[in-house]
Length: 98
Image 1: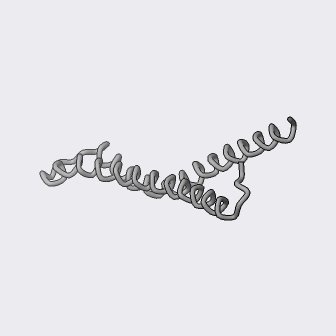
Image 2: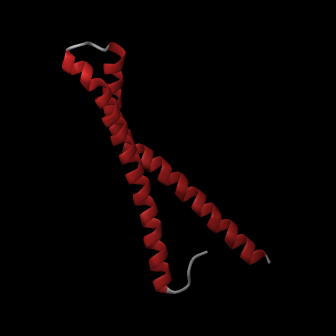
Image 3: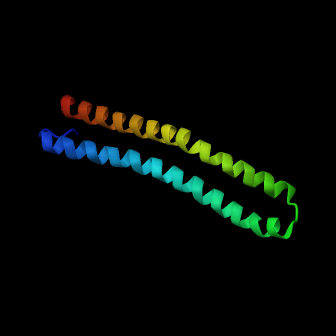
């Protein structure tokens, strides 16, 4: 599973780092899109001076979703690492048991 040459190991490490960066960017983008969409839905009613009780509560909750982006990234990255480590262990077991 792990490459033998240093340059191949470096490329492998860079790929893994890009996966983690992609996970982080996914959660940040999702949180941003949800917040923007909900604010755009509420904006016309706020401009007209109308009160939307439950909808304005939803927008305030969506603003809190931004704070969940980092914990979700940690959780997703941890799960990715656990699965990746399991794959490496299984590959090593298969290689050594044959």
